[in-house]
Image (cartoon, rainbow, N blue to C red; front, side, top):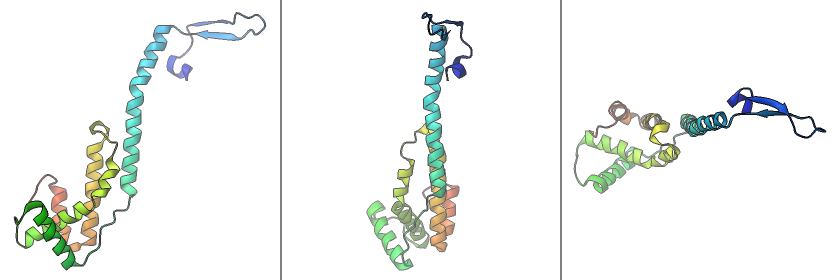
Length: 161
């Protein structure tokens, strides 16, 4: 590792003990300190990259288990969830579909824990985007009548309506 970081020694010599005659390699302190500063500054970045790659790999293979409910039960739970979150706002069929998707997304919040340990600089946005796509695709697959709303949410992640 020393040879990798510093290259060849600045001075070659022999040990002080005559019996051992072991070669001694000496490096200038300034070069050693500079190499150590570079190594210390890149180590956290490499660790963050490895963590990011591990989280993305996990997100790609982690099965998303959507709770399977009869349509009437999902509608009932979505209405209760709407009342809990927003009162009586947003009525009608389009609103009910939106709230069903919101309810299911809330039910799948446990998958957000897969993002723990990722900071903003370590690919959190990419991981959140991947998770969002996987979750909404899983909801659309489990509940085909919600597929259009899931697609709309993927196109407009910040939009509420």
